[in-house]
Image 1: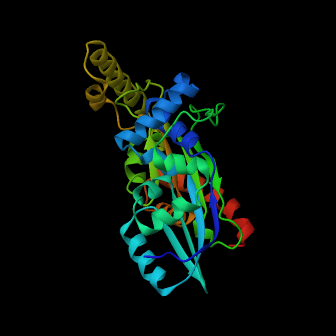
Image 2 (image 1 turned 45 degrees about the vertical axis):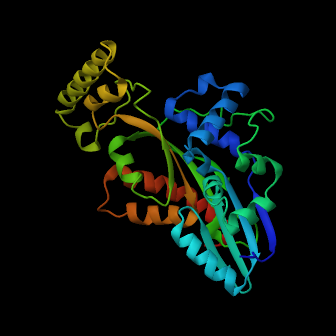
Image 3 (image 1 turned 90 degrees about the vertical axis):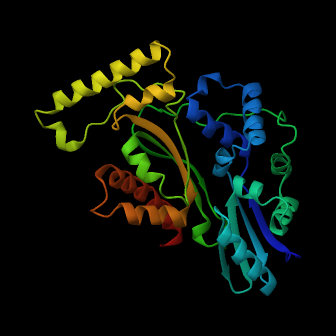
Length: 302
């Protein structure tokens, strides 16, 4: 199918740097970062098909509208995850992330977007020659031990695009596995979480529910946490793999997760999880994200 000529395209820079930063969260291996090691890491992710870290870079495009393109894009975006499609009068607005472009290779729209891509993105999509230029690790001063939600990237749709094409990425620290189990059910968003297969949480990385903070039972609860972590450390020291020893860690053990997606689906997450029937921790996270979204909506008068 012949794609109608595009009128505008914007690719966010540094897809490799973002992928490396996100991927290193899984192992908490930021101390091992170097230009050579980072290039090898992103190349390995690409070749092994572990493309989830590429979901945190973004692109935007504008196309002249035709009936043939309308039918094609609607069908394509319905069947594919991570695309955003809107239209107004004679124009289509299309956006996605790095993984959506990788998945679209060989399709009509994928070929067209590749032809529009800047050199760094072309080489990214080709998976060729990863050692091209220095990789500057972003957020070297990010305090990963602090709890709460922080905005990492805010990829704004250019003037003229529908606001739903804005894409944002958040770092969430001090979140329990109870909450991440709920968070990752929102499959229209992208996630990458610290892995307990490869990292060992400490006893201090635990969150007591607010209902217990003022209770006499909190000491008894903390004793149970200490016992669980003591058993975990013993199992690991005896040679039990961390991925098996983690079975005995409490659900309240805290972790770190990176979350990204289009503003449309972030708004949906906030709406669903701000409900009074939602669990208190996920409701608190939704409230923090909502504050950031509110600030970002102001230029759109929404």
